Image (cartoon, rainbow, N blue to C red):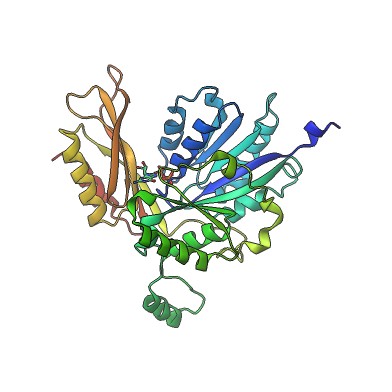
Length: 349
Ligand SMILES: Nc1nc2c(ncn2[C@@H]2O[C@H](COP(=O)(O)OP(=O)(O)OP(=O)(O)O)[C@@H](O)[C@H]2O)c(=O)[nH]1
């Protein structure tokens, strides 16, 4: 057997909480890594296939549509055997298999079950996990979004000693940190130097072993660093503790909820953004993303919200006769008030 045929295809897993900047980072890598055959596997929670759309729309030369595979049938960490492994095998069995595979997990995925999948006989020996890259939203970490409230935890423990978190966000955050080979501290543009130093110290304390932390804005990290970690992470599972080790990765994400809300054609971008921000604030929404039409505008408006911080752009022309009803994915913690949010988004200002 030749050296080329025994070479294992390196895989990079990009994880990180909802809205941390995974797709932005991936897009940057694809733009900078021209000339390399990279296949991308995207998994979203509560999907309208938006991330796939964004990546396909990147206009990168040599990046073919079939190099971007979307897995929308639930969260990767729960659908490993049904969806994920067959997808990996199909990539490997292509006439021109990729040189590198990058997987963007959903923001709520626990990376460990995915890592374990690389020990399955059908892919073991053909692929290796080059590294798990965990993207962090620096201002969200700084604001304590993922930290437990110690008093609430103590109270909960009194009631049920088997519980160790009052904040499901903290649990996902820790699992994603514990699995990391490399951390990208993203959105550095939104914090000053002192706050960044403090966040970095906080993260160093939380990780189970010393890790390199790369600071980034708009996911701008050198692909050569990101895609050449050489960690062989699948062979090193024990040093990556997970809150769900005892459950053998069986994690139903029942701490979080998501739905798609339809929105009518809007009168103006500004008014629409105000509605979205109000809804995010009032109902503690974690993530919103989707599309809408605006009166008099021939282009589709794409909106992205992480908490109350929103961005928007007109991303593509709306076709003649295309439905001008918009659709927004809304994600939050369990108990999200779906009916109330849908009714607020069904109105225009
Ligand atoms: N200010 C600022 N915004 C950023 C940065 N990186 C990403 N964003 C914005 O943050 C939002 C979320 O970015 P995404 O790349 O979609 O995040 P994600 O982690 O892929 O999100 P999910 O797939 O929903 O979990 C978008 O509006 C981005 O434009 C950054 O460095 N600074």
